[in-house]
Amino acid sequence: MALLVQKYGGTSVANLERIQKVADRVAESRSKGNRLVVVVSAMSGVTDGLLRMARGLHAEPSEREMDLLLATGEQTTTALLAIALQGRGIAAVALTGAQAGIVTDGTHTKARIANVTPAAVQAHLRAGQVVIVAGFQGQTMQGQITTLGRGGSDLTAIALAAVLKADRCEIYTDVDGVYTADPRTEPEAAKIGEISYDEMLELASTGAKVMQARSVEFAKKFGVVFEVRSSFNRARGTLVKEEAKSMERVVVRGVSLEKNQAKVTLVGVADRPGVAAKLFSGIAKAGINVDMIVQNIALPAEGKKAQTDITFTVPRDELSKVRRYLEPFRRAGGARGILYKEGVAKLSVVGIGMRSHSGVAAQLFRALAAARVNIQMISTSEIKITVVVDEEAGPRAVRAAHREFRLGRRG
Ligand code: ADP
Ligand code: ASP
Ligand code: MG
Image 1 (cartoon, rainbow, N blue to C red):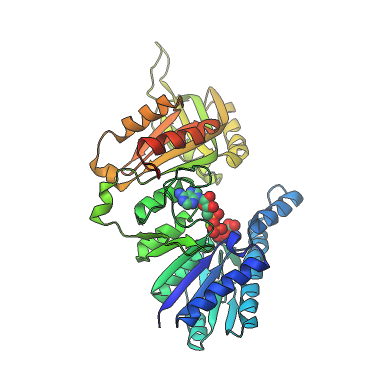
Image 2 (image 1 turned 90 degrees about the vertical axis):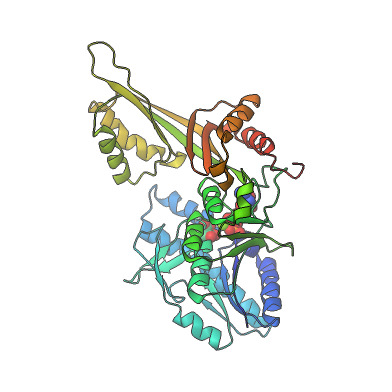
């Protein structure tokens, strides 16, 4: 009897009708003789709704209480799915993250899984039950409820598949696989048959929210092969797995866009050892998540001490925290001035084939120039090129890159 871990995302359990549809699929899988662990998300929009409610009461709600609140979303769907299955005469049990043995560290709202104790899940499986587990949540050793960061139900599923040594791990969502670009905004996007962990990880970390980045990291570490597919149709999905030689033939696998970013430039910062260290240590301590960092070369004016400019990006909603930290830094003489720019986005092209192909960056820049997209910042890694562009130009930039690397259906 094969052991399957299936995960159903928010849209797949958005209402009772959809929950019944999920129950149909689970029942079908079960009737084929499989043992099943089913991870569910909250109904779509519920997590956002809970966040809004809390923020309506307090601008910066305490993270411990946020976790208690957010965890209720997944508890609802877990219980409802178990009840739906029981209504069909199928033995099923609903478990919270804690009951399923998901033990995390104490970093509320983005806790890391420390270990998974699968004894309870295994006992229920042995008893012939379908085990439904609340995604996105866990518990610390001290019994505090935690959540695993947005999209964290993916992580619950991958972690359970790893410890239970599941034969298959299936991530059911509202698109039928991983596409060469977000299929909701790029109509020419094409479904990818197989993708390597590294490519999936880069795409997920740069805006392709189809998988939570941390879950992909976990899958890579523990060698969990998983399939992303639709809960609304039967189409084959995308297999995410270790890279194979043949995958390198594709230079660019996909394009992603991360919106809601902001750019911060510190003008006239002293150009001497220790300045960046001090600046970014302080920013990190303030809990701000900095991404791309660029420092210009210093051109000292005669008789003056060398100064430089430093630019970095942050998620837009961290900008107020950044200002709060940087304004005193500036007033204390840390910088001559600071420019804040909202409304920027990061476009990335990703592919392991870039390792063995040169000229990809130049090709991307040419395509963006032809589409009249201005590039504000550039960063490259072995398998990724990222550029900062105006948010308004984002979709046009995606289209240009997508066409340039012939990723579309009409390739
Ligand atoms: P779930 O609730 O099932 O976890 P998510 O909303 O988290 O689903 O992720 C699915 C969404 O990811 C899709 O609706 C799609 O708009 C978006 N997405 C972004 N980039 C991609 C991509 N490259 N391939 C597929 N989907 C993508
Ligand atoms: N409900 C959580 C979220 O919206 C977790 C998830 O859906 O994976 O982020
Ligand atoms: Mg998701």
